[in-house]
Image (cartoon, rainbow, N blue to C red):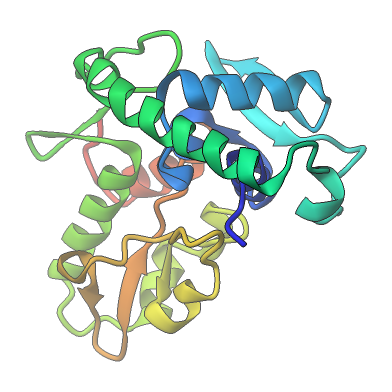
Length: 224
């Protein structure tokens, strides 16, 4: 049986110590008032906690239910038929609101609800995940025979707790949750090393990207 939106959100938030709404949106493929409503209900029910850091809402799982399974947290209150109708309506509303949200996006600005700020690297603007991918790609391109072990000496897993900055494809697949990949798995984004084919993590927030930025800048990357 497919999961409800609330169950998907809980899975995504539980997978990270803290996460912003943009990442939740990307991980659940949900946007607009549908996502906002589901998050508000989960906060009201004290299932997830929301804090404002640097002007951005950051979500985390409540300590009261941390460690519980999704089934233990969400107790269905509607019949299967009504549940299916409700999910279909949510999907329709999300699609309808997609263009509205896209129209609010602008480089280097935050619309007050989602962290849309972008980084400038090598003359181009990048989202947080896009920036990390661009930096790793650039780093590897100048070191043709680099191995995964050597790459992780410069960008260790500790820079992004749980997921790591990069992983070999087989291991990255183990982190998939709710049908959502935690890494850029598209063929054109796979990076070839001397000994492995790797992928870059896409689970970045304005907070957890800071250690990566520090490491990259120490290596001489000009990121603004």
